[in-house]
Length: 419
Image (cartoon, rainbow, N blue to C red):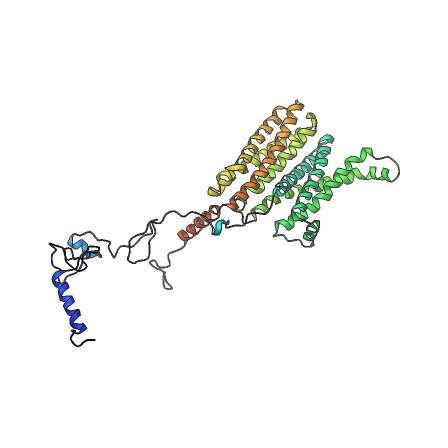
């Protein structure tokens, strides 16, 4: 330091004296510390907020005593623009625009299901097999052979197609066999494999028993002619007893995934699938059986339509944002078509009691309705997994509800000694 220059302490003391006489310039005005024209001198021993003049910094609650508006007040909590408080600190309040729910590199947050159309077809054919077996059992117990025969044959054909679609999705038939190594009650897929393995052989034996009239009366085949009817009756009842599990486990399987619109609809999906199975089975009876024997099919149609329409209405209105994928695009069109066809099928079944043509049209409408409903539910879930907002928004809403329910640990009475 040069010996000619005054000490740092003297410089600082002179600076303070200058501030006491002239005051500070307002923030943002040109000229640095130079006072504005007409500015009142600062009060050396007063508060910066209670003083007056251009050199006063109005940044705390004391500004109210001088009749000045705080700019901004230091003791006021900062907010985040959405009603919540920010951490104390300087700077102006930031206006944050609403978040757009995207993801890194345009990829969805959840990996969409790898299932394709064959799984949607598997859902339909499994329900058709279950409904047809119930129809066959009704025909068997009430002495309606045409209804029993149509139900048994359709059940075998549908469960065979369902097994094909499942194996096709698995890629190799051995994978289906490997799932039979264990029985895991907490796994819908494991339970579904065992349900199929129980239902399939029973439905097959019941359908084979319908070939009794074409067997000879003597010899080895004649023995089969005498033994098959009682065995077929028992197998038909076993298939009917397994049918409710077959028709609903696929709904549990979808709801057990992380797909938002499937997972949130866990109470409704089994109901929808059960109603769809009953309606499709009723459609088979209305198509194949004479009107004189179609009474159980008509009653089955009414019950199935009630369950399916109630479940679809709940799915499209109860889930909030997660109901949206079921109401727009391809899923919305399919589900609306399913509702219309279901209503038309029920009306046709009730009106066409004596008309073979009306009964057949009603049966076709019910089958088409079941197909549309299954595909609509399937595509709605896939759509919800592809859009990040169906994952992010419900998670934030649940987190907000948990925060509102949680007690304030910093509030009055909190602590180890609180009462």
